[in-house]
Length: 304
Image 1 (cartoon, one colour):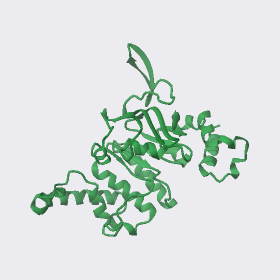
Image 2 (cartoon, one colour):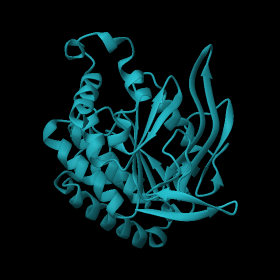
Image 3 (cartoon, one colour):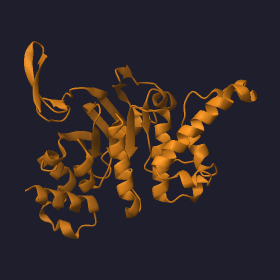
Image 4 (cartoon, rainbow, N blue to C red):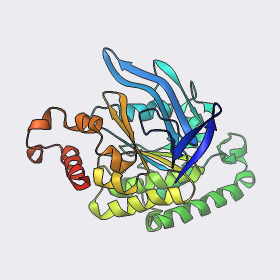
């Protein structure tokens, strides 16, 4: 649905999440995360060189691109797990420059990892409880007096059990995290992220290595995050999944954002086709071993 909002005294057409044309760096109606001039190099390799990006609030945004495009490195920079060579970025209008990862998380920006980070020798419940913030028992002196933190700990455990039940992991609450399957670990990591009541959840390849039987469950939980009022930014290679659940798509190639927009439009963007297909333009893509390239070709054919 389109509307008109004033900018510098002039009406500017807005459509859904963005203002004006859907082009790299386009302005969003209500951005929750903004990055400007973020650059990261490793020796002579430029891994990330993002001129300007805005992530729309309350939407599911997919970050896609070929292998080596810089997607995970960009995630690491935004969440404090790596430091850029230059650039500024903010969350909810507050600068994240020089803010360590644990403080970023406390601000409401939570991320998961491509390789899950569960603590294997702790129970599923204990992994969940570690995700809660502001625990009185974490203080050395208060921790010595159970009467100070016991009630809060009971409340945290009750909340953790409710979330585990929603993720169908409640039966595993007393099991070691090491005993979970790859897909269950993905579910646990997503569930643990909710313990801190985040505003923005960033998921790095949530479907990677997941048994097909759990894929739909994970998809449902991603959609549920949005339904609960959270913003989602995720990295994914499954083009069919991106097209069906993402409200907005960002495309990276060689460290840069080369396209963004509605999933159906982005799949037909020449810059996206070039980024994925590259030298394969004149080859039989069906015979390549790059699954996401073939998937993109199929989606392009579907759209035409």
